[in-house]
Image (cartoon, rainbow, N blue to C red):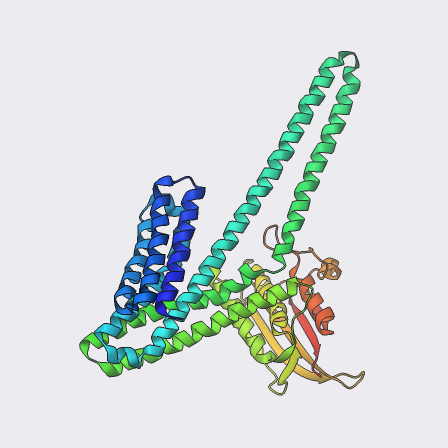
Length: 456
């Protein structure tokens, strides 16, 4: 796929989206401008194809794309689209910088062509991620608008009914007491109906929470953002070294950048795996089982959870302990689902130790442990793999212990828990993998969750 075609597609998409935006928001002064931009993009692309003037037109493409980005960003009418437009900034910068380097230093470009290719790929990932996020926000806003509209309609219906009932009471003055009782009864029913409708709406929204994508994907995206910022700083350093003529130092920095890109690629793929796994669990299918290294999976989610919590609360600290049985090898599981179970249990463990830490108990040190082991079942001789997540928090009260795997039950304060984490984890282990999920706890001392899986 040629660079001109890619520029054409991106410019066409951006100009068309901006044209639709000004049209929907009644901004006729801009509509003609973006319509002309679409025509210009088509003419430029046709010229590129017919005349094959790649060298000339590619710089026109750069200028055109930059204009489509910079111009709306400077106009207050396009402030709601700021994040959408920013999605195209990295591509515009990288493509322009790449072509500029190719002209200035052809040899350098040839030596580091793979770097520019990787950087371009990252800009595509950035665009898709931002556009996906913006699309989700737009859908959420639309749902909120529909919800408010329904509530307004319901309130108007209540108001109309109330007026009718008050008029009826006024007409029947001789039966004032009886009509007053009937009116109060009717109003109580309407309030109950309103409460039921609001509750039904909340229950419907819980279906979206089961996927949990927004929460789960934040951790790998934090890594991607952090490594991207570091890579940008390294590129600045590399440019400085190149200007000084220190090629060896520049190569060393380039190696660091390459390592960062590999980490970005790893966490980007991890984010995609999380999305895929969560979406698979939200459907009827449980996903495809594959040989998975449980030790690597458990260690990865332990670090992922800890750094994710640290990113939200810098004051949070805990001691992490691991004890992995290296003889386990790989077992057939759905890695995304088992990973989500492990992550949920670890998050709960961190929450428990953090709650206990807030009590300021002298000498208390938050500790979360994750261990794996293999054991031989006494029943049919099959091997079992045990995954244990242990914390030294406050433990689970005995009076609610039998309810923790029930849907929508939570011991967390309102707004901090959906009551679905342990329920879904239980279903994944027992129904999806034929295993067991057990809990051992002692109030005031801590809790241990045990995942039991059949390895063969």
